[in-house]
Image 1: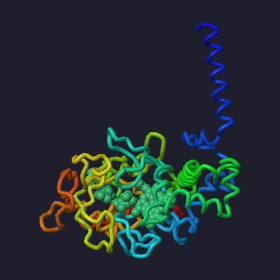
Image 2: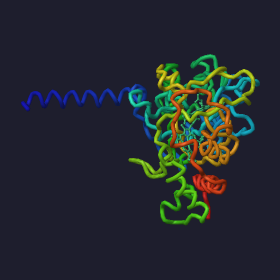
Image 3: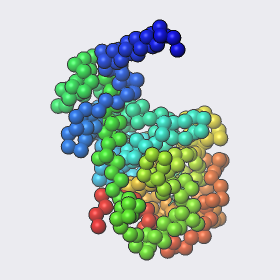
Image 4: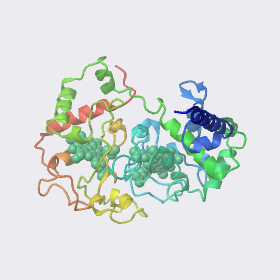
Length: 367
Ligand code: HEC
Ligand code: HEC
């Protein structure tokens, strides 16, 4: 390479570096997350995100936070477990789907439309956690703010607004778009923190060689990995760069019946086509994301429409879906995942053993 070319590249590099220095906010919008000083176990930015995540003043009217539907005590899923779906801040307004866990969601790869893999929500319609976090504030059946400016004004009035300026610059609230984006960035950082993703279950202890399964748990594990077929979609082995997440991030139609116990005023009100709405392709109708099973014992009820109240019911459905007369027909009667599930011939005790194994996926395990 000739010397002048070399110098040109060096100068260009310097200009790029310099422009990054003078425009920290722009840099963030491009998606490179800064990491500040740590406070306790959380970094500065994770802690800021935590305060936003738990702030019940950020809805319209005040009263609902992200944590209202994603509570740490129930595995960062909906704490009100007697209903299949969540109530918004306006009483009587309900969404159409069960709230999944916000924990371990940071490990879901960005939505890949070609392979229909990954993405946030049951139908993958948000590419990643930052895009996801921009949704609930403005959703009329959730936090119900009229627009982004209203949310930004509430953060500016919050006790932690000085921290927000410390992280994102003295003019952090001037540009509504940038500020709204950075609110989502902070939340996503918290959701990706070790406080939310603990990997502290009995499963992890056994994987690390620090504990042993009971006889029933190891029977369940064997069935999970063989006749139960669970491992095909919920692999209980480490991924490329992570410990096991019990999902391969793919989409399937399990042939679930419609939930007839939805409260009034649901959205969407009719047949839920899931991934098919996101991609616009009929081959995806009725498919929903394969969820992680971490903390699954804490996050009842189960599936996107919350129709199974217990893990036992869920496993019994997978075991017996195709036995005539056992279940009502599927809500979306096409693209159904075929014979690997539906008629597994598991006994009652074998179903119980699988459930016992699933219960070892709960964080906070102490011997
Ligand atoms: C009123 C209850 C409610 C509130 C408030 C709420 N969520 Fe959710 N959340 C849900 C529901 C329901 C879904 C699933 C919706 C869907 O798939 O269409 C969901 C999905 C998610 C997901 C996707 C997880 C996955 O596996 O795909 C994440 C992450 C999440 N919410 C984080 C948040 C954050 C951050 C906030 C606050 C800005 C928030 N939620 C506020 C109910 C709520
Ligand atoms: C063909 C892939 C596949 C197989 C095999 C499979 N699952 Fe799933 N599982 C899914 C999908 C997809 C969902 C979400 C379905 C929906 O909500 O529409 C799901 C949902 C679940 C849920 C509810 C999760 C939640 O957050 O509500 C549990 C629990 C579960 N599966 C356990 C199991 C167990 C245990 C086995 C083995 C007996 C198993 N699964 C086999 C694909 C699979």
